[in-house]
Image 1 (tube, helix red, strand yellow):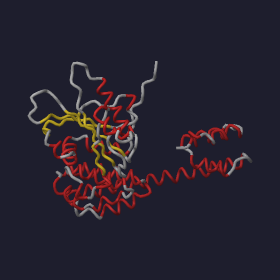
Image 2 (cartoon, rainbow, N blue to C red):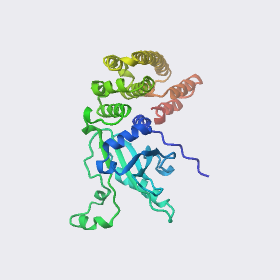
Image 3 (cartoon, rainbow, N blue to C red):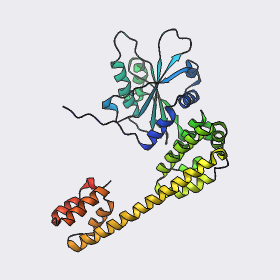
Image 4 (spheres, one colour):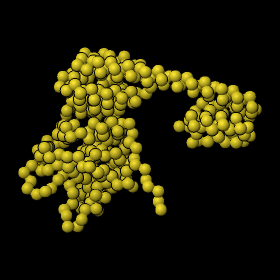
Length: 339
């Protein structure tokens, strides 16, 4: 009997994008802003809903972190819904059309023969970089001309709808206030300049002016935690200083902003204490190993410094129980002992 597969663990960036756009107001604002106008006019946007189950089956779940929405056509008398598949990509991946094709064909295969096939539009939010290839699956056939044009009506094809944040300026970040904030952070983090979102004064001003206080606190908290996680602990001081420069736009929740900053400062202090404790532990272990084993080298010391806390514990226990150098060296050179 096979062990059950673990559920996919989204990346920090996937998780943030999904936390923003799984909300119907943000999803509706995003789709209406970035789908072609003639497509937008087809839909009754009051009927948009998030489908409760992931579109991804277990054998595809490790490749995608998706959101699947459905919507009705304007004036449609039949119980028919068009599906909008939202997919976030950290950077361009040439395999995306093929992956999405697997995605779509699985859904078609599972549709009962007596029912019409589902109509699925794929919408890809590209956080960084530019898509340099054709967004159509047919480009992956790589047929010479004129064969490509002649065969086009007879082969499987679809076209991804791409939203490339690298091509959008602040004025092009459209949707709800929370959605625009999410796009601003995804964009600047994707560019490797996470603090640049604080220069988007229009986004900040609208956020502070139009959102109710509780919603503003929620979005601000989510944004700051994503930002500090993406920037890394070594930049938390820089994040705090930069954030203070934006408090004018966020005056209504200045108290919340300051509370968040204080929390970040305490978290940084705790992390520093923990890091200091680890450094002392590593230094002591290196000294003991050097004294006990003539074969302990500088390379072994470097491995100790890179070890996980659990691996350090294992080496310490082995040393305390007087294990031979051969056993301890095996622990030091175990690749799984390093993150």
